Length: 390
Image (cartoon, rainbow, N blue to C red):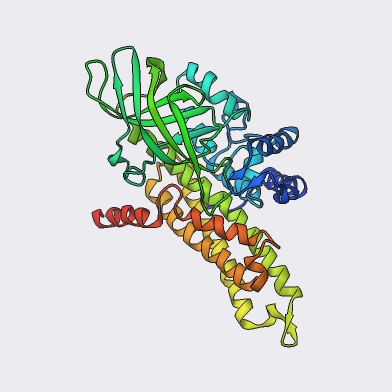
C-alpha cells in the first residue's frame, strides 16, 4: 500500500516545531553570535535551552536515551519544519555533524562509550565531530586515508592531519578515522576511535574561512600529534571504519536533504511575498510570466524533492539499507534546492544579494550542501555503477 498521508499527531507536531522556530529561533538570525564561522557555542547553548524548554531537544534519539525514537519518515517531516531557519536544527540538536554522529554511536558504541561520549551529546551539553577528511585526498575517497594509528597491545597512538572537520573547535566527543597499522593484536586497516576533545595530542590549527556559516564553530584544520588512546577507545571492530562510515552516511545524506528542504521553503515564501508586493511596469512582478514561472519551477522542485526524500526514508523504515536511493536523493535534492535558492535570489532582484532577507545566506549555504556528505558527481558515479551492473 502506498500512503502519503501524514498522521494527525505528526502533522500537529510538525506545526508546533515550525511555530517554535518562527517565534523563538528566527529572531536570533540577526544575533552577532552568528558569526562568519557559524553560531558560537554560547549562542548554540542558548538555543538548545529554548528547545529543551519546549521538549523539542534531540527528539530523534532512541527512547533509551531520552528521545522519541523517530522513524526516518517522522524525521523527514520534523526536520523539514526545523529547517525553516538554519538555526532551527542547531536548537533542536538535529544538525550536522552531531545528528549523524549520534546515529552512528547509537548503533556501534558499547555501553561505556554511550555513557561517556554519546549521552552528553544527546543531552545537548556537548558537541561531536567526525574526523575523516584529509588534505591529501581522503574524503569522498576514504581509501586514501593517511592518518595512521599504531597499537602496542595497550594503547593506540594516532598521527595525521585532517581538514574541513565541522565543529572541531570546542567539540568534546571526537570520532576519528585512522589507518591501523599491522600488529599482532588486532586487524589492520581503517578504524574508528573515540577521544575527548581536550586530550593532549589533538591540535586545532585553525578555523577555515568558508562560504557557509550554518554549522557551530565552522570547519577546522586539525593535527593529531602522538595522540595516545587506550584500548577502550576503539569504536566497533578494528579495520571496519569504512563499513561504519556507510552506516552513518546513508541516513545522514537524507537528514541534510530534510533540513535544507525547510530552508528552501523559507526562501520560496520570501520570494512569493516579494512577488506579490513589488511592482514593475504597472503590476506586481509576480504577474509577469518570467517571475511566475520561476516560482512555479520552485514549487515543482520542492514537491519532487519531498517525495524523493520520503521514498528513501520509507525504504529505510522497512529495513532496506537504501544506499542507492539515498545517493539518488542526495544528488537530486541538493541540485534542485540550489536551483530553488538561486531563483529566489533572482526574484528578489537587488535585495536578493543583500542581507535584507535570509535568502542570501540560504543561497550561500545551499551551495555548500551540494558537497556535504559526498559531492553530486561522486553520488552519480555510484548510481551509474549500480545501473550498469543491472
